[in-house]
Length: 248
Ligand code: 13P
Image (tube, rainbow, N blue to C red; front, top):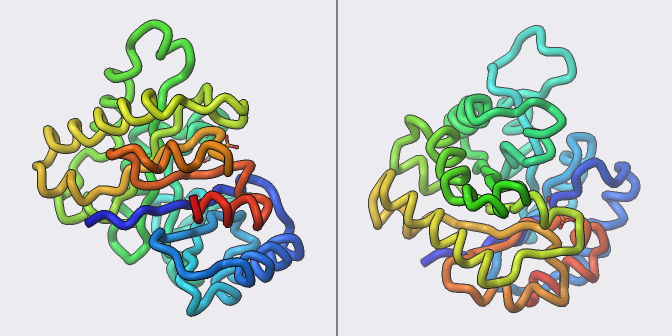
């Protein structure tokens, strides 16, 4: 039984004061729900969010991490540092990090492996560009991202990993993938996991869709069989909008 995970990805938005204001408002709106909700925030907000959401069931995530334990890596944050704060999730391999910060399948794999040494669950992002979709290589491309990013990861660990399908052309564009397009790729991702692992393992993996998810389209996206959640950018910045998405 997969419990849906709807996570906000704030990207580089919200100062600590703004994050605290959001968290207080969101906590007051948040009632009982069948889905797991989480906010993936800038590092500077994580400690405050963990504190405010303590005991509510609302999760907190980081948006990136380094794969080394420690060392001379100016500007980087380690898994141990995140564990100490008590975050639940960490996004790995978002397309913006692949595009602007030279993230590769290899570094995605190293980061996931390091996260899996502790309790933080990786949210691994995959997804094709518009050019790749139009030229028909979308499935091959996503398969190669899965095989590269998940290389050497054992079935028991795979169950802890969340896969987020985020077609690059749907991110921040207002142009979401149709529910059918999203379902088709999420079903392909599950089939690929069956091929790489086995049916029982693949069955337990949470597969999210991300890309222009908003209150108006959350229901039809979440109602797809193979879509177990959403990774929400812009619409997670306002507490009432994000609450509406969770209540889809
Ligand atoms: P938008 O919801 O703003 O399109 O962003 C999606 C995203 O990149 C989430 O990680």
